[in-house]
Every structure is written in structure tokens, then in C-alpha cells.
Image 1 (cartoon, one colour):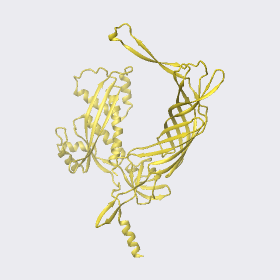
Image 2 (spheres, one colour):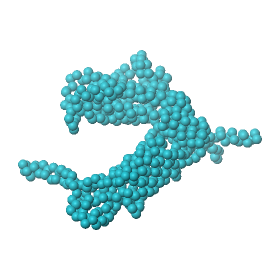
Image 3 (cartoon, helix red, strand yellow):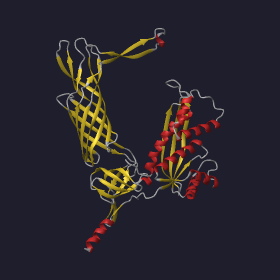
Image 4 (cartoon, one colour):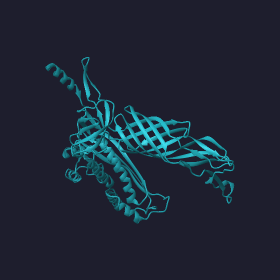
Length: 504
């Protein structure tokens, strides 16, 4: 018995995790490379605010940082160099920092497409835009004070703002750069402050995503109860409802031919956070292809999850052929709105003036809006049902051989079954049934009118091509009717892309 337990202990001792659990907040120092540059300093404020919101960082207080810079006479010229960075890190007690450098910033008026916006309205918009707008106003005020003799802007209420910022992630022990990335923002419209506030809002949103990937969380599975998990980490370190974690097996150490080798960890599933307490969370397994057990590591998926599906169906009735590509917006929630791009072939009824009826196949393409409810969402598949509103553009020829188009729309009820075949793909079976009559809008076509200005000679002809929408011409028959009245069964594949900046 003792020998048995000893062998079991050795087996567990050969399973290790290279990832360190996220038990503490990361102490982070955020610096503007040029502390005398107003926009660099204000972007540092935005960056610090976003880092604080995530709760996984202990951000060095800006006021203390300013005091450190002044007392130590660091960066006296305004530019912070490598030696300054190392010394600041030692004083602040941080091992890593982010140096912010504004590579490009410009604002200029451009000719507006519509009427000019009133400056008063812009100021009201700025006031309603929150903290980022206040920062923008500070930057503009400083710029005006530094450029009092600047020429008057030609288009002061339609400003194009461009902003490109580089973020260098630094090791504060040796001053070396660990990683680097840039953010770019552009906005056209409004006065100087309003346009800048919009560009800064883009930078702010991108900043939060970059910070999340810079320090992604590593949790541990504490308990498994069916398809539900209890995992370490909670709201005190920034775990939120809806966060997705990737579950991994331990790395394994083996002795082979007098050599010690490490077998990499394997991904075995994904879990989505449902409830969060201060220091733990309960999650639901959304996909798995191996057994998940307590003690396994869960890595935060800091990127986005993309889910799409291809489907193909055909029938002797109408629609004869249906191709679709769907994109899900909330595949693991209860409500899953989707949009789809569709095409195929329909039967179209042609009725002559003498009431003689013929049918022809006509092509169509368009898009659909789907409001689906996930009735069952388990690791090996889903069952969902909902309503779909498609908009199909159909085409045929009128009696004068013009290529004419009509918009066909109606309401469908859909049910979808998906079954996992591997970690990234599901087989999808989709049933759809019209619940309202599909009707065509007026058949129309576009005609190009070529007009020439006769007041100029041949060398300076100014020609314009105007498109005019005209009704289809039906001389020998009534307007055709596209038919969409039968149930449709389609088969396809659903694919998952769990994008992440984790180095796994």
C-alpha cells in the first residue's frame, strides 16, 4: 500500500504548471517620454485611468511620480532616458513600466461635406463627453497659449485630428524594452476640442484592450460540478461576468534517455464566467474535448471571440438553393443576435395578360437579421431558436430586356442544432420556415443619363453621368412574383476563433 501511494505521489510530482497564478496585482509605473509635452502627459493620465479600472494593476500615483521626478531632478530636459527609467523604477518599487511617446499629432480644418457645425454646439458636445473631453480641452488650451500667433483656421468647425502613440513596455531593472506597440486614431468633425476628444476616446478604448493582454490573468480550477466550475480570482483583481478562460492540462516532465524533457500543456476547453465574488468566480464550460479536473490552470482569453457559420441547402421547391454565412455576436449568452449574408436561387412566377403562368429560376442575394435564443448551450453543442428577417435583392429581365431588381422580404422562424466535431468546428443543421408571406417591392432598374455641356468646345467637355431609377416595363405580362414559401433545411459548419495575445 505504501509503495502504491509513493508511485502515485511520483506521478503527480511530474505534472507541473509553468504559469504562475495571478495572486497579486502587478505594480506598474506609467511615464510620458517627454514630461513637458502636454498631450503626452494627458495620454499618460488616460492610460493610468484605464489601468486602474482593470483592477489588476497597482498604478504608481501620478502625484507621487511628479514628486519623484522633481526631487531626483530626473529628466531635467523633459526627456526621460534609460538611466532615469531604471532609477525611477528603483525608487517607486516597480519592476515593469510603460513609456508613452506621442509619435504624431496633428489637427487641421478640412472642407466639410455638409453645412458647418456651430461652435456653440461643439462646446456643448465636449461638455457632455466626460473626462476625455476635459483632457482634450486642457491640451487645446496649452496649444493655444504656446502658439498665440498661429494663423486663423480656415475650417474651425470641421477639424481632422490624427494621433499616433507608441507604448514601450520596459523592464525597470535593466531599462530594456520587453515589448512595444502603437495605437492610431483619426476623427473628422467638430471644433479642435471636440475632434481631439473623439480621437482620445479611440485611444482610450484601444488602451484597455492592450493593457488586458499585457497582464492576462491566470486562474485555477477549484471545483468541477457537471458543466460548472468554481475558479480562483474574483472582482478584486478585475474578473468580470462574461470573461472567457482557456482550460489547460499541466505540463509534464519526463525522463527520456537520461534527459529531462517537458511536455507542453494542452488546451482542453473554454469556460465563461457567470458569477463573480471578491476572490472567486463560478463559470460555465462552453466547449471541451477532454475531462476538466480540479487543479487545472485557466488562462484568461484577453482577445475577442469570433464565431461564424457557413450553410448550404437545396430543394425542389423554392428556395431552390440557399447559401448563407452567419456571424454571431453573443454565441455563449442566452440571446445571440446574428447577421447573415445570403444568396441562391428562387422560383419566380410569371403571369401573362392572358393568365398563362410560367416559372423561371432567378438569382438573389442579400442579408438577414436573426434574433436567436439559446435553448441549450452545452460543451458539445447548442440548440437555438428565433426569428429571422431577410432582405433579398432579386433580379430578372422586363419586356424591354432591362435588368430589373426587386426587394423581397418576409419573416422566418428558425431552429438550429450544432454538434462539436473538433475544438474549432461544429456541424450545424438549420431549419427555417416562413411565417409571413414574402412579397416583392416594385421592379426597377437604373438608367445612365449622359449629358454634355454644349457651351464649351470639344477640348473642355464637362460630361456628367446621372443614374435615374425607372420602373420596369411590363407590356405582355404582370409584374413577376418571387416565391419563398417552403421550409428549408441547410447543413453547414460553425467555426470558432478565440483570438488572444497570450503567449501560450
